[in-house]
Image 1 (cartoon, rainbow, N blue to C red):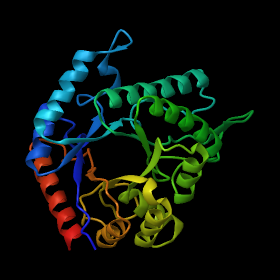
Image 2: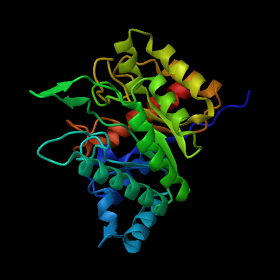
Image 3: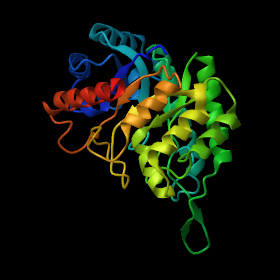
Amino acid sequence: MTEIALKTAAVTSLLKYYPLPEALSVIAEAGYDGVELWGGLPHGYVDDFYEDGCLDAGVVAACRRLVEKSGLTPVAFLPEQCFYPVNYLIDTAPPFDGERLRTRSVAYFERGIEVAAALEFPLMVLTTPFWGWRQTRERFVFDADKVLDRVIDTVGRLTRCAERHGLVLVLEPLTDLETTSVETLDDLVAVLDGVGSPALAAMLDVGHVNVTARRLGIDAAGYFLDHVEKLGDRLRHVHVNDNAGDSDAHLLPGEGTFDFATACRALKAAGYSGYLSAEIMMFGPNPVPPNPAGVLARTLEHVRRTWHG
């Protein structure tokens, strides 16, 4: 059997305190092949690429030159969507207009698609938000309805936008601590099938799989294997990090309980040709200079050893 080539990348969010040129240099010097550009200030917040409502060609070109100079392959654009105020599933949200908040959120992702395409990143990461509230006469009630029909409608709209820009969206399941919608393998497949476009594919975060498997009371390595087998060639991107199954801690591989050896064997057996992209916790001491360099080096060493082991 032909050995599947390992391709590695790192998300720049770990280096959130670094200016983008230095962040790219640290990732390249650590030995990674590609970069996943975090769409947060100061690395690439979506609206910082616009001037008076139009894409700023000069800023886009300057960013492209920085990536090219680093020698890193552009892998994916990850517009920040967990911490910044965007939520395309928000419903009634007094005293504010829920429809206006949803419309603004969708527009943010449409600009993100335009930015990703202009920067010549082939993929853009998309997740589903956390909501699940409904208003009664007395107060709000939380019932965590997955509203997958609304997800399919919105993601379908964004996918059509991606098609026009020659871009592929990769939908990432989160954990129940971060989303009320696409969390499980069944949720993910339902949205992929519901949209039914080659411009919408899947991505996996191994840490998220670990947390969700524990919540479901099943084996995490087996659950990851189920994802790989069921998704087939619709699996286009993988995030690498670790946890103990109780929270989305984004630890270094080997610091938690996830079985990376089994996961790597499953990916290689399936002929996975995408990147393994390190997404390590961007809080705590990790992002403080000069810590990210060592964090990235240790992560890459673990990934290489496990992949080839």
